[in-house]
Amino acid sequence: MIPTPHNSATEDQIAKTVIMPGDPLRSKMIAETFLENPVLVNNVRGIQGYTGTYKGKAFTIMGSGIGQPSIGLYTYELFNFYDVDCIIRVGSIGAISTKTPLRSIIIGRRAYSETNYLMFYRNNGNRCGYASADETLCSKAAATAERLGLTYNIGDVFSSDTYYSDNDDVATCIENNLLGVEMESVALYINARRAGKKALTICTVSNDIPTGTELPSEDRQNGFKDMARLALEMSL
Image (cartoon, rainbow, N blue to C red; front, side):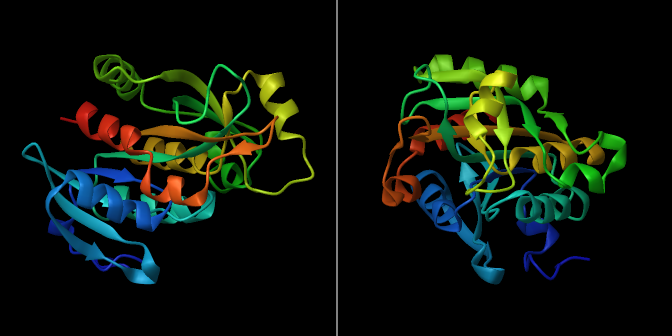
């Protein structure tokens, strides 16, 4: 199964730890900013993946695309075919509370969703429920954020299947004490648990949902370097 229809890399070209932004162009930015000697190892469908070293340790930076099915496909292959040990998602999130200001970081201890992805793997619960990150990674992320002096919160997030919805995501978040809305973490966490691997989501607040305040798309693509540095530093 290697290479796969979605990943042209050979097994030796993918590191044991993968940092995974949603935007493939953010993969390029992270790789060029932080990695030594980054090499493009995958560009199938424009999902750019780069492998290089950070402070002597090998990392792969690879995009996931948007939503549970997309990140579900790529992380399933990375965990099960490429034998990746750990995937840390670094993405954007819409915040619900003033306690999580723009550009601050949210570490997702658990992800709640009503996604159909939960139905495909019945051993992981029903259509509505939670999936959990690796607790050791959560602790490392929080400790590293403290060391780096970053503004962060740690808690549960809402993984929605839709960016535009008739549902009241704010009400769902308030009812379940969720810090914000993103679109990938449940699939990532389920795939990690099924494969016996580790996963964590670290997000940067890109918009405030109740007020409609948001950062421009260029900031999302080329900014948000703190969460990438956090993911790399906590993995050393």
